[in-house]
Image 1 (cartoon, rainbow, N blue to C red):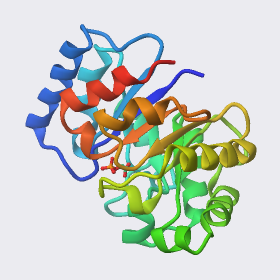
Image 2 (spheres, rainbow, N blue to C red):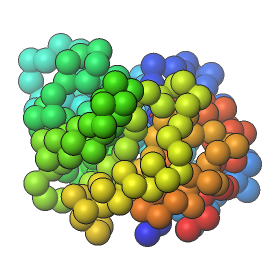
Image 3 (spheres, helix red, strand yellow):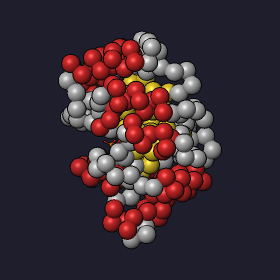
Length: 239
Ligand code: PGA
């Protein structure tokens, strides 16, 4: 399965940050490696400009969220069709920060994933337990519930396993725990879904994580903001 290395810039980046895309293109020798997919999900304000630049290097652009409806009276929201029109090929849905900051439910994540498919985008559906849930031995039950409620009923999708306690903290599960959860997700998401690991992926730990069975790529936050770090993670993803 072709690995997908996805950068999630979150609420970071101004026009000057597009220079990182040029830098990344240079570090890759002008073209993303053919044996892996590289994706950057910038803030919506930069999506069209980033998509135009990234395309020249074979790098995909994606959204960080979308509204379930194609258009309408939803001030401040952006539809999957609009993301596609701006050059996106993927969209993240159900990220734990959206679930926490905006009270997003599994049902809403599913509606967004189905909107993405309707617009011709590939949804990246995020799941993952909190520290308290892991310590209570509930990690698998939580992820099972999120998958059952959030995955689209049909179509090609990507799953991102992102333990909430590993995001932005520098902490990661053991490789054994990552392997166990990815095998658990594989059983539920099916043989075709790429399953990304996310949460404090850095140049120093990427090769180890990406070599774990059923880890088909990474969703990278902080380390995707710097071209050198993101490039090192892309380079670590040998198919
Ligand atoms: P991080 O974020 O790499 O900064 O931990 C990952 C994510 O939330 O997608």
